[in-house]
Length: 121
Image 1 (spheres, rainbow, N blue to C red):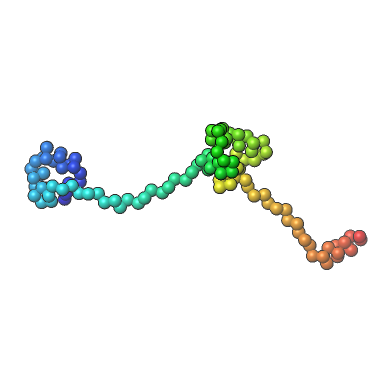
Image 2: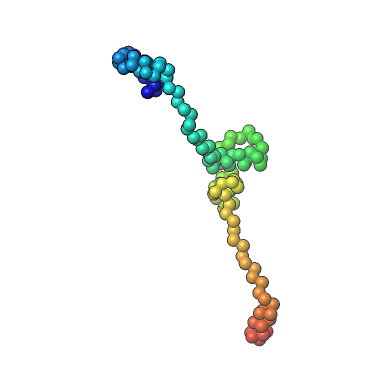
């Protein structure tokens, strides 16, 4: 079994020279290189504030105001309009919710006329 690290090799040569000599004879003095078989880490997603900053920057361009001040101002305007906090950010889960459309039920014309006749109109 080769040395796992340079630190292990030095330790064995200092404190266990018999074992180090035996390992050197059997496996050599090279340190075993670690394989890079680790999976790449998943990229972190942006938070609500970052996405809101990006969307405000894309819509309104660069301003002299800080990003936090822009978020606070945006939040206040949305609150005044009765919207949720991050509704300016369309990619956010907390964005504006879709309102349900009222069904404008078109009844069958013959059914409508028959109902009017029954009502006496």
